Length: 368
Image (tube, rainbow, N blue to C red; front, side, top):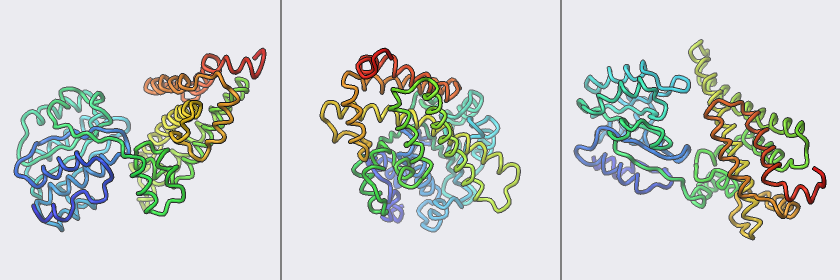
């Protein structure tokens, strides 16, 4: 497979050199394992690498076949997306049916699945095949963390870890693509190339950040005002979801019922992801305040709003900014239990005002 190796299997991928070296060796050597678990936070390139890796595996050294695989046109490279929140047992059974037969035309057959979306039945259905693999099938499993994958699955796959990409490297990449504020987008992405690209180009994400800033410093407002601030954040998250749903439908000239249902699922997932991102942005805002308070402005991610944050730090000199950031981590846990996003935001903002910032508020607003 020297032709593929020389061509650069993973050209264009930022960061994670150890993981790419391991996978390149797996492609260019005889044998290799039958299952890989790609672990790392969203946006660091796991899925892109999985597609390139899978294309190289099915190609067997044929450049034209590898190109087809990269473009999603090779029948032996199959990517399975969850139906809603979960990859179902029906989807896994179809994978197992295909895995039991020989590749259509490639050297191997590769399946890319999201391991942290398996329900119990789906995971159990896949388990036997992972224990006793047949033929030339390779499974590439994706997950945000090993903890999100059933131990019986993760223990039967070779873990390949993907870490956040250096912000400086992401900024250089964005600068090469002509992004106007590459340093800001890279900092907001927090090591995620995909998220940095979204902040650079998606109006909806920029508006979400604006709503977060407005809510994050609304300390002097009453409960009704905090309710409106929380509602604005959720409204911006819904706009992100609507944009994702529209983008999904653009791929179809005349979308049928199944396509429309898929678009709705994609929209809901994007909306929920935007709510989670809003909570992370709030935490990032307060971490920036903590850094600025101790004179480490160079560590701030919101590089375009340092002066505004510094003014708030000066206004509330006894505030526990680090404690405020930690409170957001607890709020994110609530989303996993399907608590209303508006309720989570309202309660969190009230808690931050009442318990984290009380000393400063009492000085700034006596009797508040």
